[in-house]
Amino acid sequence: MGWTLLRGWTALVYLFMFLPIAVVVLLSFNASQFGSFPMTGVSLRWFGELAQNEAILRAFRTSIVLGALTAVISTTIGVLASLALVRYRVPGRNAISTLLIAPILVPEVVLAVALLLFLNALSINKSFGLLLAGHVIFTLPFVILVVQARLVGIRRDVEEAAMSLGASPVQTFFQITLPLLAPAVFAGMLFAFTISFDDITGTLFWKPGGVETVPTQIFAMLRNSISPEINALGTVMIFLTAGLPLLGIALARRLALQRGG
Amino acid sequence: MTVEAREARQPFILLSPALVSVLLLLIVPLCFIVVYSFWLRTATGADQVGFYLDNWREALSDAFYRDILLNTLKIAAITTAVCAVMGYPAAYVIARSRGNKALLLLLLMLPFWISYIIRTMSWINILGASGAVNSLLMTLGITDEPIRMLYNEASVILGLVHFLLPFMILNIYVSLEGIDTTLEDAACSLGATRWRTFLEVTLPLSLPGLAAGGLLAFVLAAGTYITPIVLGGPTDAMFANLVFEAIITQLDWPLGSALSLMLLAVLGALVLLYNHFLGMGQLMKGLS
Image (cartoon, rainbow over all chains, first blue to last red):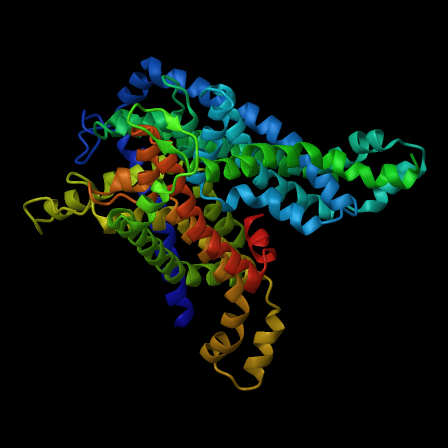
């Protein structure tokens, strides 16, 4: 009896998490011009309008470029740091780890204010560069956590074998460690991309006037009212930000299967 | 240079981009806003450099700020408690289920990838005047007029719970997963009922995960800015909204700095307390 009750509760919890999202997807196909119930029919009209909306397309481009740059920079820095923390005896390792994770623990609003004011004091005005720097510092801890976790699982002997056969540390890294680490690097990049793509609080502080990312664009549109177009945009975002990682996981699994034989 | 010296330097060469980033983009800016909070906003709109306590006096003594800070902490506490009560049984079921564990975990990860602003606004579709609930109630004839369920403190908490629940479940799940199940079997074989086994073995052993999830949920909820704007009424501003107002709208950067530091101090104290009693290790486990 108890177990059934627990499972029922769990089903309700999952329903709670997914029902609102399902409703966004459902309403995005609403033929009515209001983004709400009752639905008057099924239509792709709002996706069409979306594809015509210059502001939204521009926001998409900004978000994708920002997310991609954030992912590359953050993952590069993160992989180097993880290597040092896992593969070397570093004095003050715990303090350094905590320092590198700190951006998660500082409330995002505070981080946003600090960075904005500091760069402004250096006479660096709001720019795409500030936005990028903010996103990198914000995603770095997540990349380090993901990469470190995987690196701990890669046996050191393989690297040592390569070195004893005459490979330089750089060669060893690119030919042995990196291929083994690839899934984590990939996961870290995806993680950084989605976090950057989704970020809104910091972005609102850092973005220069006139520049919008997809979340800030949605936020601005919400100020008026909820329209079917927002639901359509939400649906696109759901499939993009959840679909991409799912695709990534499927790909990684297939690769691992092929390699593992 | 000796080989040893070169080897000792290597990790720091690898670490330097990360350390420089964190120092330059987080630590130094944080020190800088401490300094900034003692400057003064003048009537002309320029910031006067110096050592003035005015911002701090205003931030600490004005009942307006204090009330919103207390309200923010209250909302964060309720959100955390609701997440714990809703999430614990779910985490338990995931940890102890055999067949569909992978699927349940994947579904739990999915919300992390679905945009926060979309998840927040999705509640308007559910609770709004012409949302799913009201639409259903009116179709069934239970009510003639839409019931007002949005734009109050409860809808803010609901939105926050929806956002933070996966964090909580994942953290509890990780610590439940780490429990040696033979301990539970041992308790059972010694005659404890399942409920007693849970209360005296499982629950205590999973408390670190509950605490890690609770800390994350509380800190994230207390720092939230978007949810009260989208789902709250005009009087439901939280502390982060005050900071945004001061910095972006009023351009009163010294006051905004003092307010930011106030929030950081309160939440930082909590993190330090957590670190003192439980250490950061558990939090790292839950995050990765």
